[in-house]
Image (cartoon, rainbow, N blue to C red; front, side):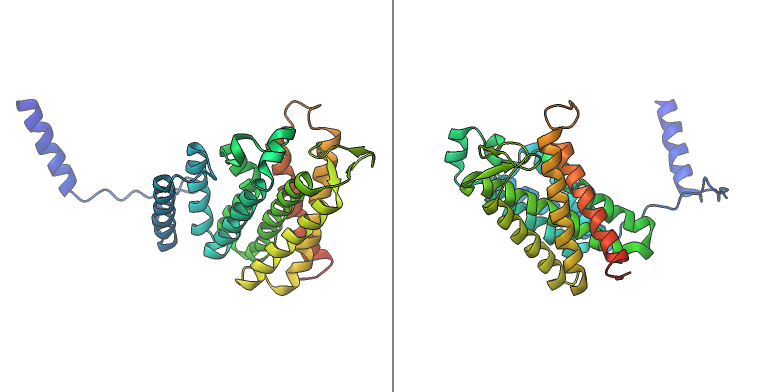
Length: 280
């Protein structure tokens, strides 16, 4: 008992003593972590929503997908995009999930439906929103670039919403589908296939995302054109990648192509904002 008593007394004495002041030299100086109000709100909100969703038996996300979506939500809400960027991502998730349900039985019968009944797993979460998360996180490092990063952020999600709607509506209602690289007629659901119905739905999705970002004050009205153009360019590149490389290059999975798709959209949107529209 004596050693334990001595340890207890020593621990108590140490806790009461003032900690020594250590002066660290750069670059080893690490600022103390702070729990900002935004981070507190992000943790509380996303934990609450995840709990409610689990109890309600939500089916938009798999259990692990829900955990990763929680982490994504915390990143977005606590960053400079705040509730505006967070709600745009939620808009994508809701509309995208609804799109996968369109004529689901018909798609399943044809073998072109999304797996797991359209429920998103971790790979889907980050394949769709990794670029957006990187834009949000980079705002901590380069605050001066926040306006430009906001355009890149919106462009990435507008691209993904456009891609999802084009794919799902095209599979459900596309009467004539063409391979984007050769323009040969192919069955609906073929990788890299495009249709008039899907293209129009994708364009509408990018307009909705761009308009919503303007409406909530995330980006200025002048940024709508760069975002919409970026989404069209990126989804076209995604079709080319799907037709020409997916299934032929091992590591080029659907999720990797989705990430590259959103990355192209973010880059094109930011570049257009600077070079052609002189927004920043």
